[in-house]
Image 1 (tube, rainbow, N blue to C red):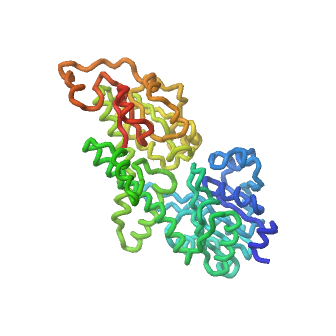
Image 2: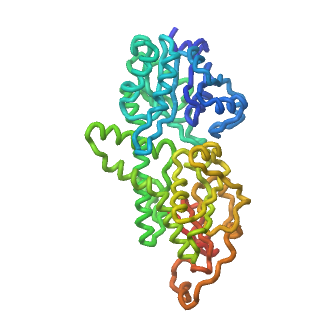
Image 3: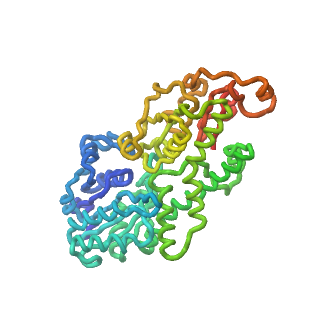
Length: 460
């Protein structure tokens, strides 16, 4: 029988190498149909999974408690499987070059424990050529096997959207590829066991790798355009959200919005593509221009926060700002490459103390990556400004009229000789009289309501 038939009959096992936001949902999905070994080098993470705790919050504790995935940090257990899926992170270095160490390490681990006749599928986002030119030689060296003769490889890019309960592994068309027709057919059939939306057979591994990396590059560029529009309209005194609402009435207008672009995908993947292009003598213009805009948006938000505080007659050095949300997106604990951290660091350059409130964030990772701790919401008091950076569902229940209790109540009114005509000028707010600086990055609140309640309001 074929590997696919053996897997279907639970005679051969599938292994998942890397049990993060991508690997864990894949492992759980396959475990409903097959025998699955879930491997991760992080023993603490494995212990949590074994105790029925989902640190990623992707599928929930109840699902983890009931799954049949065999969790392990013992790499030798990989020898029990014949179909291997590698789903480890592919971050970038400080100089924006690809950091392939997790992928190289995973390839080494698998190579040491590979059995003849196995199929290896990579899901990590890479530039075209990584699977065949970097990963395969490592596996060959570690295993002593020959690719194509002793084992086969393929590539199937992950499309899981962390925090998204609608677009899941089962409901998104799965792009699959293989080194030859036989491996392609096997990979397509195995994924077809769990992907209800169906599979798309890419022409080659490099085509599949390229398809993935441009998906996020395209989104990054579109968001960069929105962010640039926000900068322009801010200078014009025009509300970007209102402009986009008007433009969005046209049937073919692409409905992107401005925002902070972080995380392990959109803020990272374009650099993989431009790195490969640079190695071939082409310097990207559009992609890198978009990256530059998006990478600077945290600083831009911080600068506008300071400007609003000055307009409200606030002291800057020694002031305190409460920031709501630090994860890279709403309702997701992932703090990797969070651009909210850029806001914090820039405010600190001005001498501003920033306290962070985020009930969703992975506190261990937050401390390990950035040396930042979160506060409870009841600890917020005597602040000079509020920044709502991430629109978690838990924040959406907050009412505008109740936010004022958190502000410093010692502000003095403006000098009438200087600011007496402010209200008559038609400008937003009144410096000194409305000390409530509210920065609403993603537009959680209604601008008009905030202004009517005396807030000095700003959003992208």
